[in-house]
Length: 112
Image (cartoon, rainbow, N blue to C red):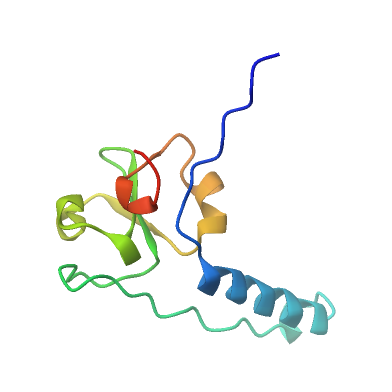
């Protein structure tokens, strides 16, 4: 039987995990009723000083190349500021569904 492929090693996403835990608790407290649910505010994402663009999530998928970047760890060579056909993804937990088949950049924490 062939070995299962190992999941990509990525930098931890503690802010994302905390947001999801808070949101789940609020949803439970609301009894699963959307009218009673108050979503927590999204975290404020940050990036190294060389990244100047406004951030709408921690991860950025370059749809032209199929490469996903972790803007919190972006390298100058990632060229995050010049990605024109990009989609931001808020949390690491959303990556598998949001970017099927995408390749991780080295800035994600593992090999590309």
